[in-house]
Length: 194
Image 1: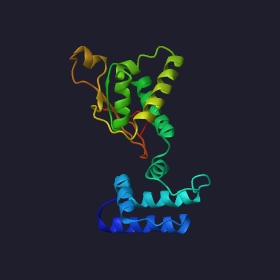
Image 2: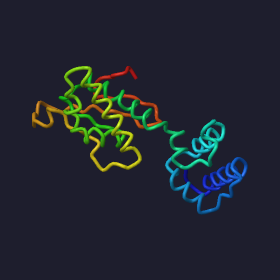
Image 3: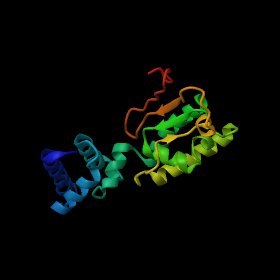
Image 4: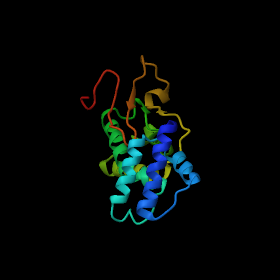
């Protein structure tokens, strides 16, 4: 959301929801606080989340908090974490620990680093070990989401860590952000056929 027209429409929508469904007056300070919390999302998605909130049994009993709306836009932390793990798992199985990876999603990058880096995440020796890695990833993702990340988005593979210079280092880019269409991009190959 950006600009005065968006702020005006957002304010009208939030005030209308407050008055029409919750018998609640929504003042300028509340509008500004919600605006700040939701400003990174497109206005149409925020308005749609407001509408979905008031139509969803169980949710509609209380005036929506910004986190409720973000969850409706992005999905639950667990669902997003599972979605992001699928991208990580695909690269574990196809590229492995030797290549470096670069993450578009800063939360995924943060979690991978907290788990010991790319080579540690790829070190599972069995499907059972990989299942434990998945559980750890999903748990950490849920704890890290929303906190911001200051770690680099690239995690070095074994070749980069060993200092091997066998030509240009291959870096697999794991593209995907929560609530966007996810895809995998890699130099000179298409992993999902996209």
